[in-house]
Image (cartoon, rainbow over all chains, first blue to last red; front, top):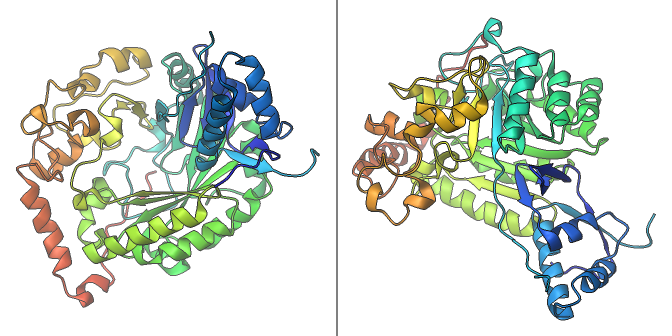
Length: 96
Length: 373
C-alpha cells in the first residue's frame, strides 16, 4: 500500500496517546507501542491537519543532522506500519 | 547529534484481565470461565476494583480487559469504566452485547471506553443460538448498527470450531457491514467447558487447512482496512503457544471474587494457592507470590524444554494444558511435537479425522455453562 504525500494521517478511533511512568505510549486495541523521540514527533502530528509532506519537512528540520532522504524513508515506513496496524486513517483533499 | 531511529517492534501491553462477574445471559459451550462459577454475592465492590486499577497502573499495566461472564451484568459498569480511565488505563470491553441499549452504549463511551470487542458465536442465527444456548444473534446485529454512530474501536470476536469454521467468509462479510477495524478469529482453546465439549468442537485437518487459506486471502484483501487475526487450534500446531506470553510475564487475571491468577485456567493446577486483592497489593502479588513465581523463568522446566532452543519463545507452552493432558503441570505442553506425550494428542486428532461425515455433523448433546446466581 502506498502512502500519498498529500494525504493527512489521523489516528483511528480507539487509538490515542497515553502515558505510563513518564513513557509516552500509543494505545491501540489490544496493543501498545512505546514512543521515543522521532516516533512521538510523528504520532503527535497525525492529527488530520498535517500532510505527510509537512510531517516529513518538519522532522527533517528537527533532525537536521540526519540525512533528509533517510528521515523521509523512515517516516513513510513508520506510517505504513501504523496503517497496517489499522491505527491511522488517511484523509485526502483540503483540511476541513 | 540526535539519533534518528525508531523502534518498530510492537510489544503487547502489560494487561490486567478483569473478570468482573461470572454472571452471563449466554451459556456458551466453550466458555473460558472455570467449571466452578462465582455467585454475585462474592463479587468485588466498585471501590475494590477502583483500587485495583490504580495499583495496576503503578505496576506498569497499560490496558484493562473488562470481561466476565458478561461485564455489563455489573450495574456499576459505567463507574468502573470511569475509574479505570481516570487512572490512565486503556479499556477493552469484551461483551456479548446482550445487555446493551443505545443509551448504555453512549454512556459507556462518554465514560471513557476505548474499544468494544463484540463476541459472535457464528455468522448465522441458528448456529449462534445453538452454541450460546440463548437467542442472541439478532441483538448483536443491532449493536453493530448503534456502534456506527460512535467514535470507538470495534473488534468482532468469533470463536471458531468444527461447526462454524466453514463460515469464515460469511463472518468477514458481516464485519465489512460494520465499523469494525479488527476481526479476531480464535479457535477454541481446550480448557474448562471447552475441554468437556472437546470431541464436538475440534475441527478436522481438512477444515483447518481450508480456513488457513481463507484467512490468508482475506488478510491480503483487507490490509489497511480491517486487521484479521487468526488463532489456530494448538492441538494441530507443531509447537505450543507462548501461553499468556509466559507465566507471570505479561498478564494478570483477577477473578470476580478478587483472586489473582496468571491465566484463566490456573485454578485447575493442584497445589497452587491464589492471593486475593482484598488482602494484598497487586505489586506484592506480582513480585512475591509463590504462584506467580512457580512457572516464571526456566528453573521449573523439564526436558525437552530445559535445553530447547525455543524455550524463550514459547516458555514450554501452556501449564494448564500440560496438567490436563499429561497430568503434570511442569511437563512439556503435550501439543509440542517434541513432547513425549504428543502421541496422546495425535490419538485425539485421529478420532476426529477418522470419524464418518455423519458423526461429525450430527448435532451433539452439549454441556452448557449455567448462569450463576
